[in-house]
Image (tube, rainbow, N blue to C red; front, side, top):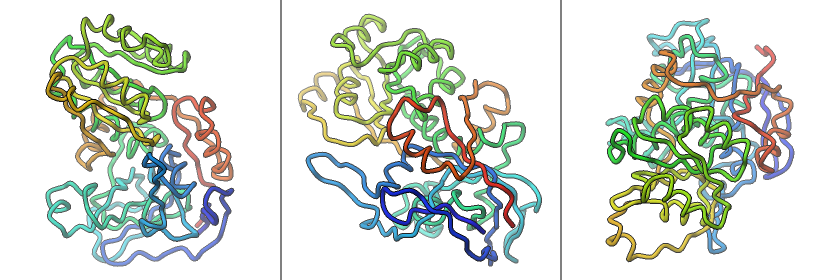
Length: 356
């Protein structure tokens, strides 16, 4: 097998050859055909996340050692399995749920593997889809994507369910015709812009500093858009929404966008934080009782979320986000394009040449 790997943090990825692994036990070997490039891959590639206030958390502190193979948005062909793996059809193509826990603790047993304290996440803790082959621990993580295009299905395993899970968290706050706000309409936020009309009954407002992304949001069904870099951005939201939004999701995660999201909420509103831009925001504690607001973090989604999202997509209820496919040889270039901003519209998915 061949893998495009991080050899040194923040430096160009390198292609290396390894023996193709042989699955054991419940494992399934997948020949990777599509692997989405997620913005979180940029942080992993750099080796650290910004916690604000001069503090960072490094991937090495979280147990990641180099060389490492990224890629957690994976789809491909099942080509072999261990003797304990049942229900998997060799030669069939699947999307892979990557947010895999230990499988034995209480949160894993109740289906919340993304909360596991000892995760085995593909592409962030164990080798992922930037390799030509990936070992999936159990067939239950293989999901039939049906009529959905494979590159799009791959993106649903992270950016799609991240958006869907966040929408679920504001859904109880958003009644029919209630306004809600999506902050950041790029890769993950762009998924939310396309999923929300099929899932929420409210009026979608979208904020982004990029005029092209705002235009795409209007085409996808937004009732209004806001340039959140404008000095009067909050006032624009209050005007569009008639006094504030019932729910907001921040897909950027910077101090400025968080403060903008808080300012846009009406009384009783909820802000969901998703973006990993980094930094620290100053929010008045008095606003919590005065506005009776809540702020919740959201990270990826469950296996059930992926199943539900693919069902919506197969039913034709979601407008697909634009997908650009690139050769795996362009992985470093693609990471740099994401990091610089403005060079990627929608999602980038890398493809592998057959390697057996």
